[in-house]
Length: 66
Image (cartoon, rainbow, N blue to C red; front, top):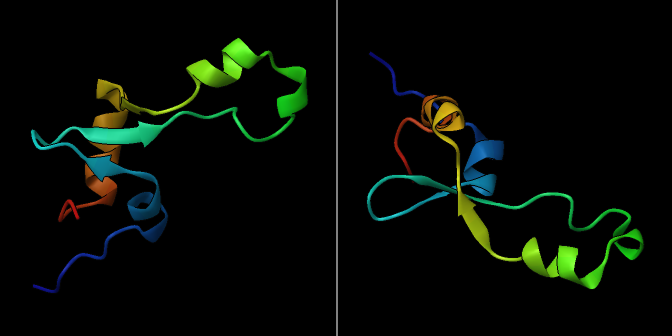
């Protein structure tokens, strides 16, 4: 059987923790940043664990968990 291809957009957006949970960056940070308060932008820094509903979809797109 041929190998499955990893979805290249997903591989650029998600990394995996040591336990296998997908890590994502937070959205709404770049566009129209002047309207947002400093506190909002500060709270959007860093990364977060993807929700369980999204985890199933991410694992489908990335079969080999790069």
